[in-house]
Length: 338
Image 1 (cartoon, rainbow, N blue to C red):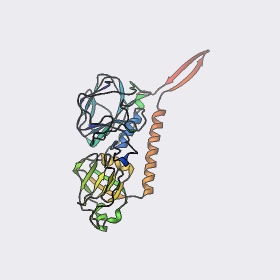
Image 2: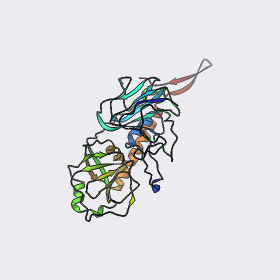
Image 3: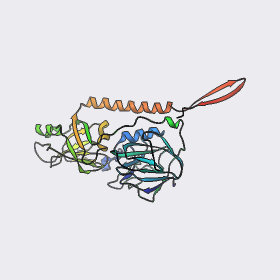
Image 4: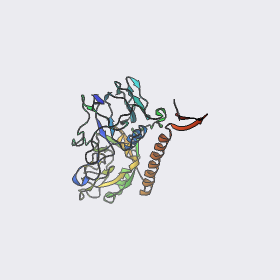
């Protein structure tokens, strides 16, 4: 189908969802969105399952021409989205008409924006996911978007019930100076006391130019090992902080390797992973420790946030009543309008 035409692909625009799980044993990384919170909010706004695939847009956005009516939402980094040259409100559902173009302009803050499409993209899952592993070119679409390509929507929707109320508060991303909460381990015992102190130093670390979907290399004080050398390779979780021989932190992210032999001093907690996914080269990263119990409470709070947002958006739809007046039955729909 040719519902969406890629006139210009932008710097790096790819199809991503929550990721591909259950295959790390074979060396396949999960991939998936770098900022899952932003993608999930966008999906809820357009009445999708919150883990539906959308587009991840990096720094410089694409130009997309719609060839059918569709409802979209853009969240995450503010890259100045427009529809036919007019500013597109972020963090709300918006009905795009056939023939209109979505473009992006100046980056105001953040690194990655997300576009959700009502009804989802018409892309068959590969091993349970529609995500693209860009570094290895694996996925149902095994590359970043290219100019001249067209994509379809599985179930496009020209409108949604009570469209004007399908919005939420815009989240401002502070990607230039980021505080990441971490849980120490599993190999923190391999580091000197000074190394642990340096990891938590108040000045933090600078994101190097070697920052991508696989991981973010940081520059700052050395995180000293008691004894240099490798460990027996073990599994890598998203947000793991490896310390390679140069003793500079490496935070592994969506396209991380499945196993690794460098000691891991800690792991970024789940709710803070979107923060580093929105950081740019040159940004400052600071670490602070929390307990496992605190991290679990924060995950529960975020789950409650998504449940409340879904309930709010569902409740904001039109209400239909049946009324009888002078023996005549009427069906009445009450809908909030702007």
